[in-house]
Image (cartoon, rainbow, N blue to C red; front, side, top):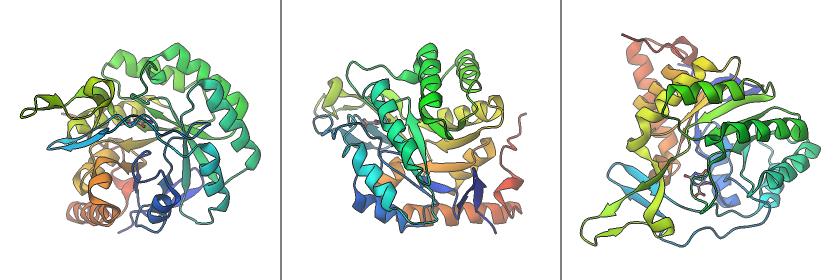
Length: 308
Ligand SMILES: O=C(O)c1[nH]c(=O)[nH]c(=O)c1I
């Protein structure tokens, strides 16, 4: 069986890698990912200056997944540029960027452009947890302006992390925006489903502290929404890759994401809870499903979702 992925000039031995934000804030975490069975590594979204993030508790696991309102805690962009400059591994490295303002994002990308590093930016248009800051990806005009500025300033291949959309009109509107940017080579669908509220029955309280308990949902909660976003954008985006993210906890969900059209698949909540051994387990499970179905390679079923 061959579970490798070759895309945008990169080779991934496994189709699985981490979702930005999970197990990727520090060099120690990034090195553990690099040495793991993950097919690639993506860094925690970064800002110009280091950030402590929101008050704790800000992450909770639940029976159906997770809720988080981390608030963009990160070491500052130079920390991740330093890591990328020292990075000498065939395993692809992606840099997630989420400036507090568009100007900050452009500043970071302008510096990245000069370094000619062998890593691709994943520009985050969808952080749901910064009080008072809307998710850029929900404002189509602002997204178009941002992508135009990014294309001008960075002028090299890049990707974006999208929020979940829930309406065919919005899939079409955002696809029309994205298709206007040839340097945009991949979209990662989806970020957490924003601003859910998990309540603890005994304490009669929200389970996380920030924003009165509102946070982004991950895990089982989001799988159908993630699959829908992967499939819709895989169909609507001409000549771009879609990276699946959301609800992957076994080979089954990884298979579904690829069937829906995903080139590769990110793991978030499950990685946070299980650790990097999740990559070995999920890959083995995916291989077993392929074996049972008679598939040798991912290309044989990628995007081949049937409809009734
Ligand atoms: O709260 C966070 O740090 C966070 N949490 C998420 O669930 N998605 C994001 O893009 C971010 I930047």
